[in-house]
Amino acid sequence: MTGESRLPCPSVCIHGHFYQPPRENPWLGTIERQASAEPYHDWNERITDECYRPNTAARILDQLGNQIAASNNYAHISFDFGPTLLSWLERAAPDVYAAVLAADRVARGGMAQAYNHMILPLANARDRATQVIWGSRDFARRFGREPEGMWLPETAVDLDSLEDLAAAGIHFTILAPRQARRVRRFGSSRWQDVSAGGVDPHFAYQVRLPSERHITVFFYDAGIAQAVAFEGLLNDGCAFAERLASAFDGRRREPQLVNIATDGESYGHHHRFGEMALAAALRFLEERPDVLVTNYRAFLAAHPPVREVEIVENSSWSCVHGVERWRADCGCNSGGFPQWNQAWRAPLRSALDWLRDRLAPAYQQAASKLLWNPWAARNDYIDILLDRSPEAAARFLQQHARHDLLPQELDLLWGLLEMQRYAMFMYTSCGWFFDDIAGIEASQTIAYAARAVELANQCLGLNLEAGLLRRLALAPGNTGELPDGRAVYSAQVRRRPAVSVPSVAPA
Image 1: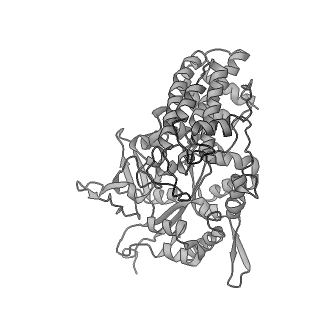
Image 2: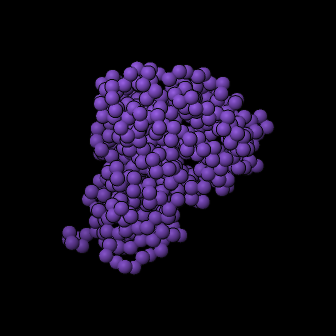
Image 3: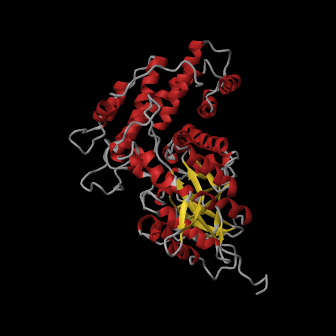
């Protein structure tokens, strides 16, 4: 076959979204024992042992069951890791952390993630921008390069979120097929409606933004991703590879990409030995001369989009109702307690919105006496979180402080910035994802809110606890023991130890 008539070599990309919510006690900075994770101390520890570490050296067996190789799977896939999870891994599992960074140096398959997994379309403009900036800076600091792609938490998307990604220098993201509204080729005036999930996932698409910027979107193959996550495809690495390799459209005479995106925890935690199936599938695919195993960055560099897409705003991959799972009793839940409802979701978000909207002007007023631009300083506070050395603090103050700050002013500044950090952490998406407000995820978001309230009181003499409690009482739970959000606050949050504002930010 001549070069002109030969079909382009099709590509395969497997993306893993590796994420755990921040679980640290906001007063102690450590994770408390979680009984549901037994025999492990906590869920981070358990999932690391079941998934994150096995994927650094996944065993590959021959037909007799003898190990013939080991694979750092991260070096062969596209992946994103939650910044707060990477922070924990750096401290608690440095071998895993080092393997993830090393894998990116091989193929640059890593993507950034919005910082603490906040649902960006439900965030206000300042929080949304800070989440993208923090996620981008965290990635650059850890991986030694600027991120080209960024994972949107729960792939929840709107045009404002994409604008923030593009403004931060992000080139691409990943969405579910049902998040495409209509598509067309460049130069065509004819749009094709794909709102029923009919977008062709074999190609990259460009979204033209109101600012006249643009960003590329990849839509993953929903059928194969569903089979990996829920239908047992990881029971057989060979079948997994064959499913990917057979998903190309043989009629197309242009470069194609078969790509899937799932929770990375599918590979070992949700499915035991899933990391071995992934390693086997990658080995099968890499040995085939007719398939190229790649990642989104590499595919995009070789094959820029020739199609554009309009997205479905306020949509996500894990809620068929859009983003309602994080603000309403939409019917989406884990399925473990079918008799329960999630009527607590809207009042919880309303309570936290009320708190956020009182903390923001108080922060701005107080911080404006110390800083040239309080919100620009908050964006740069990620540099302090990543490096608490006196040198980093000095650089931060030189850039942002109006004058040389006295010790009590420094105490106030670091307390105000921590207050804003927890005002964002209280929106971590897992707080709404599961079944009850008394669950460990929702309780964690309430703990972050309580810490922000405490800091507001310590720094500014602002008492917001009573108002927050009145609003949490309107969030009904499903158990008699903890019947509402106020009870959760009293039983699971208020008992935690209070500490004073640290005198300095550096260690």
